[in-house]
Image (cartoon, rainbow, N blue to C red; front, side, top):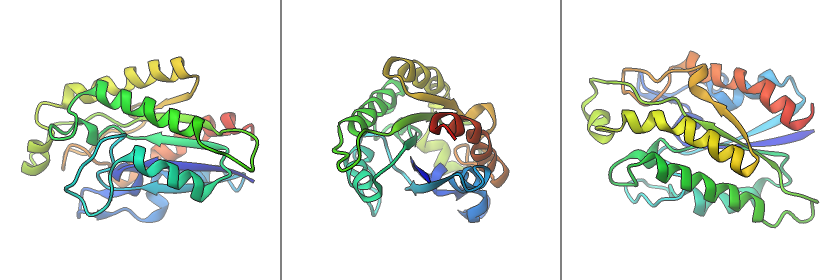
Length: 212
């Protein structure tokens, strides 16, 4: 059976802006993707709230630097046939990096980590699928509005930048905004139907990339 690793932040973990709490497992996009693949592949979810592509954030209880954590996760779960990366939202925080171009460069670093990782005893590196997160929307939530103040425009740049990067590095690409929108409750996260929609929409892309 083919194996895919879903590497992301709170959108992958399943942060529910309504409670706030965590979405039920079947509504998180990695689980929805796994269900849509109907047993032809398994999807391993590795989502962490606040995770960045390649930048430090010392405000959390866990290491949020994706570039530092990814090699350990690749070794933990290898062999892998596909690595799906949906990150960049947290890079846009003013105290982290603040610009879409920084997230693009961070994603480029993650692709390099996957491709240069030691994949022994398997023969080759997995395919890589870059997923741009849905852009922010206006919110009345004071904390989230302040955290991402002035970053809505930057968040809209991620899809184009990631698409260009995917072309450059010969990765797959999917724009999650084509099927999902962020919730105005906090302007960043997704309700249950939106995150589930991402998993379902990814199924044809993953099927093609895995040759299922």
